[in-house]
Length: 206
Image (tube, rainbow, N blue to C red; front, top):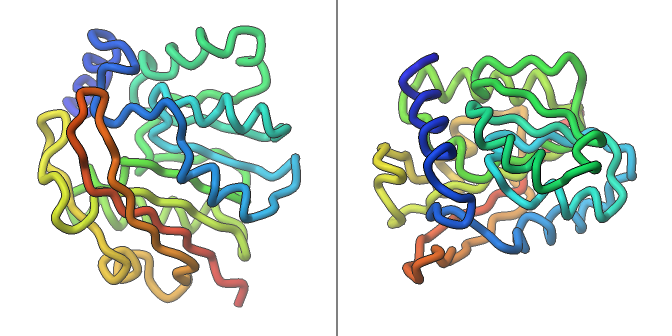
């Protein structure tokens, strides 16, 4: 287990899901963007860095049937398995570093809230871009939420890279197009605020 994996395993072994700064009782921004895409119920969706997010619960409630949750820490996904109960059988769980991900199938939607900004090295960032490109269908979409410019410089004791639209699109390259950018002030469980940027991007078809 790498130091990075051990870090997140320890976080989720020692803290409850609602005791971390990124906790959302309602992933409203993500859901609004997903709802706006008009995806079919059998659309292939992955949530990378899913942690213990309740996004999976909300997507199951909406009738989606092809949902994969990815996280580097099994302890994070264990919280979701327990919370979902019998519904957990409707979800594929994969313990993996996103930069090494190989699901073996193409995706209609890639969702990432607060993974990319932890990848501070150029090699890691390019690996992320390569994995995203390999998995996303032409015409598919990615929702990527990161700390915005001027937001936190560290999270959970780790350095992060802040993004605006220009910086993200420079990383993703010409095969992707920016559909929408939204800024969000995330309120932590203890009442402080963090500046997030949420990007909806599409993979070009030609």
